[in-house]
Amino acid sequence: MVQSIKVAFQGEPGAFSEEAVIAYFGPAGAAGPADGADAAVAVDAAVAAAPDRQALPTWRAVFEAVRDGTVDSGVVAIESSLAGSIRETYDLLSEFYDAGIRIVGEVSVPVRLALVALPGQSLDWIERVYSHAQALAQADEFLRTRNWQVMTTYNTAGAARMIAENRERHAAAVASPRVADLYGLEVLAADIQTGANNRTRFAVLGREGSVESSPPPGPGPRKTTLVLAVRNVPGSLNRCLGAFASRGVNLSRLESRPARTARWEYVFWVDVDADATEPACAAALAQLRTEAEMVRVLGSYPRTGED
Image (cartoon, rainbow, N blue to C red; front, side):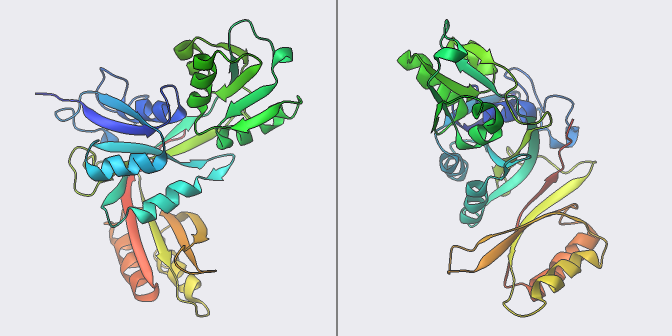
């Protein structure tokens, strides 16, 4: 019998996180990933016919739901092409590592932002603008053209829903244009994001070893995400990175974050353009473990396209 898997996302219906769930798993009533994604990232159709999308208030709540097994998978924002890394997500990936939470996939979603408000409002009537801090940053050039009071909320779609439910006049939200129909609002200004190629990358989370959330390996390019801590001696980072360079394994991302275990200590987050089981990458990881103080592999998964 075909059954639906449960997928958690942060925010309200209409949030970009929900769009990421639809892009990866497909809309309700459809199996597998949408928009031509590689079949290797599909959840087996015998297991999942369509995602049961579950909205949760915070990214932490998504991690907890995956850990506790109340959902099969979770989708969390991990990086904006404009605003950079979503640091809370990386901290949560590290925190929930021992709970067996791993990255099993990724999906890139185009970010189109609109200013939405109650029907009958106009730009000249707006006094307050609500949205998530990331969305406000991505629409900063537009927002600076008016003398509006800008206020942060926990989610883009949540800001729109708040205005609709409170019937709040003289207020607008920065959100996906899709929320206008969902909450009975009107678009006052479309495509207010900075730049035409703004995208957000989302990580798909699953429990280690879970069949429901972990698609089987298939053809196509793979990626591995890991976090490491280097010894506080000269050349340690160079030797750690050299384990990959000497074997021709490319690193597409390298970023430092506070270790959160001691003052002024840092860890490095790395995206490797290879699967952890590929011979060259596996050898590099083996050498890395002899040099680094700590190495955690957060998951190997199909690399997303940017189309």
